[in-house]
Image (cartoon, rainbow over all chains, first blue to last red; front, side):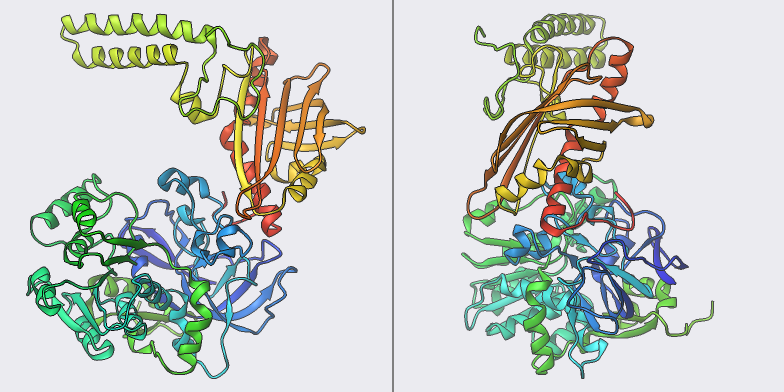
Length: 397
Length: 241
């Protein structure tokens, strides 16, 4: 089959690789019909996540059709259309039983690596390095899905792949980020990063009762989308002083909650930005946290800082004094997708939230290398790419 | 210091954070060696060899600390303990919580022939009598080792302990405790194994095995046990472990 394989920094290729096989009784093989490129795939593309090896298959956003199930699978049968959550969760450990699916004890065969890095392990993730288990991803014609009775949700007839694909990651991720803000009616929620997760967080915040959402970014088409699709007030951090703009937009109080939908590759500004860029290049600091520092400084007293963007390691110059002095609440973590899948699928089915507006580029899987480049450089208004594993290439090779 | 017991410690004792894990004679040697090293290091300052001198002072200081306190971070990191395991023994202790009731975890373990399913270094365990069994393990380089074992304690749902019998190539004993975890979290499984690598050429080979069956290995074994009991299978990814 064809699959998008990682070969190094800024080097992904479409390789012909062996089809995946059932390995355990609870596995299923899914024939992928649509797959997305996620912002967090860019961290791999940019070489910032360790534990990648040449030939690793990427991709953790995919929907498809069940092709084959193991002897222990009872809830799915060949032919079922399913959406597959990006965390791999066993459904049996204490964490899964408590709706903390992304913290699954059992699904990461390389748990010792994360234990060394973080003190304990998280769930395995499709196509996301040896650290997260070394599972092959879904930017491929077929993918093996462990614990198939637990994660995959059947797609109601009448919904297209494009309508449900973002339930795999970015919609629940934005929703969890908003839910972590404990929004009360009329609250103002500011969202750093108007990429797909940020936009989903804005939609979710409004759904959860926010009176005002504010989107912060520098890419014009992203700010436009935040304004037009999510009804957000927008702040361009390259044109305005963010703290001052937020101060003025909130009657001097600051936002009640701030969401970080940027993560460890923030494009810093000023001296701190240069500092981060230099230290990260020299590997003296693993994460550039320009956005997070701003969030903490801007948030109102007693407010919540909700972190959806991915961080991998160490951050310098954290304004802990501000966290303490203002009595902030910090919430963070990978998304417990399985917890949100069913309620959010219902919102999509009832047409209360439509996520297809995010898709700016539809491509053949074959054209993935060009897609990754486009997405990284944010050219051509690129916000979200989805790929069809079986469509013919539209590019001359 | 007078209360040092010569035999193996009782599992669960001495849980202070900086617990003693260096044996008595080893501690004495640490203090003497450490002092010598530190003095040599200080001397090299006079001949302006600052960096090696500093390294010797630091290493010497660490050895003295290890000797005076009886605590060694390196031993702790690798799960070794020469204080509680008696003469030339090596202790490995690991604990893990499994989201299943103690009786179920106990029963799975009590069926000793299940052990090779999650203990990677075991080829087979054969039950040979009511209390006796025959074990076959492999070490690095395809080295094979066998021994007979006898069960000493068997408290259903709580504890099993065993020791090797006869002329075992690698004498060993161990205890596994099953305790109900608080708040409906299942069972805390605590394993404590003592190995006694003998001297001589055979001892070297045995020590290699003892090394392979180190703390990390036991921890990975317990994770596999947890996976089998909780999910019915061992987590497997394309990239392998």
